[in-house]
Image (tube, rainbow, N blue to C red; front, top):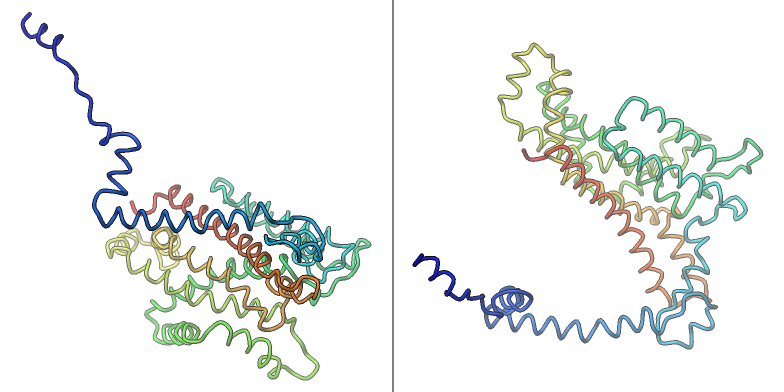
Length: 364
């Protein structure tokens, strides 16, 4: 009875307001000492000085769908450059009346990519879907049959070219990089030396030099009258360059596998091919998902370098738009749009890699 009466009469004390809630969080994380408080105040002042003018420029004082002449008389952004030139920026020199074809090809490509994201769909039928999809996309882009106008690859430009170079570059470079990594760890001196020379040689030169060689020097070694499409040459250069970096990442994953895993494979009587396929590579590739995706994202952004060899990817078509006297002076708006386009694609790849890591329980 005495304890019950004591508990009933005891007042419950709440923590101070400065220690809980929003005030407590601010005091703990932003104002916990004098220099953090000073940095917080400086950052707030920087935001106050930059964010309101940026909002005024980008949204309040801007024009979104008007002529270039009207944009000359405003202080804000001229976003009109995007809707007025979106057709050329995205599809370049592809015939205007046939632009439904690259649109359909892009939708089909993205549909296959999203379908392939689900790990449950990783079956043999997926390869059939991709094969059929690639054939359909090739027919749509090339034309010449079913009443469609023939469009040469020189007219393939804009976003379809960027997606084609990046997607096929990544898809083809990854298995090649795995083969190079296995070759570099081979016990056969000839194979190991060849892979080492290739990897170190490719990693020792910039991508621009490979693109120049594929565009300018490589045709000099071909027989007279024989030509290879410029887009194909650029695609091969991107694949060879990316594969060398993927090889080193995969080699790091192979070295991280404990020796006991190799011994376990040998004890089961598995040959080299089966032990790599069923035991070693699945573990190694799970380990190197984050750095591999980093390299693939870099490869996607590196496709913009094809402007050096006069291929009209989405960056080049944007630059051509800005060379029009009507739209000169609005490069900031055009490049912001282009940056957002690249950012969305890279963010999607990064988000998928995190999801894949979680599904495969990487690191456990």
